[in-house]
Image (tube, rainbow, N blue to C red; front, side):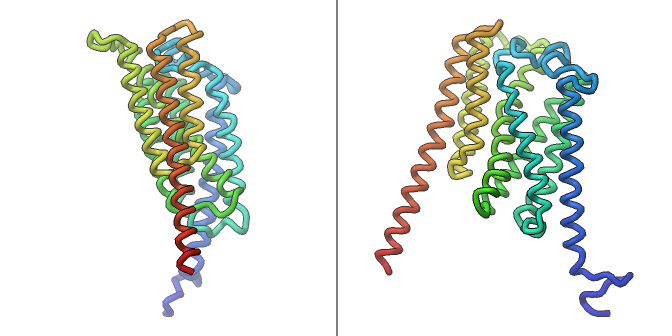
Length: 286
C-alpha cells in the first residue's frame, strides 16, 4: 500500500478537502442556528424580547452596568458581518486558506454559544447564562489571537474577518459585565455595603484595562475598540438619561471609553512610526 492510499480507494490528500467542507458547513449551519436564536430573542418566533426576559434582569434600567437599548443595534452589524464571513469562506479562493482553517471551528462554536445564551435567558437561567457568555468571551479571545497572528489578505478579508470578529469580541467584553451584574442583582447581591456606583466603576476600570490590552495585542485594531467604546458610551447614556441614574457610573464609563480609544490610537501611531523607521533604515542600508 502506498503512503497516499487508504482503505476504500481514498487518499490522505482528500482528507483536508473533506475537512474544509465540513468546517464551512459547520460555520453555515451554526450561523443559521444563531440567526434563529436571535429572532427568538427579539420575539419574532414567540420568544420574549431579551430586555423583558428573565424578569427584566437585562433591561436598561436593571443595573448600573446595563447599556441603553440603542446599544443593541450593534448586533445588526455583527450578524451582517457573520453572514458575510460565512459566504466569504465558501469562495474558491478561500476554501483552503490556513486563516479560515484556524478560525472556522471557533467561529462556529461562538455562534452556537450565542444562540445558547439567548435560549438560557429565555428560560430565565441567569446564572447559567453567565457561564455561557464567559465561555463565549474565551472563544472569541482565542479567535482574536489567531487572526492577529495571520494577517488579512486584502481589505475585503480585513473587513469581513477582522472587522466582524473584532466587533463581536468588543461587544461581548461589555455584555459580559452587564450579564454578571444582572445575575448578581437578581440573586439579591447588595455589595457588602459598598455603594453600587463604586462597584460599577471598579468593573469599568477592568474593562478599560482589558480594552487597552486588546489594543496592544491586536496592534490597535479599530473594530474591537469601536465596539467597546460603543457599549460604554450607551452605558453612560443610560446612567444619565435613563430611569436608573448614576453620575459616578456615567463618568467612569466615559473615562473607560476614553482610555480604550486613546490606547488604540497610541498603539496605531506607534506601529506606524515603527514601520516608517524600519522602511527608512532599510532604504538607508540599500
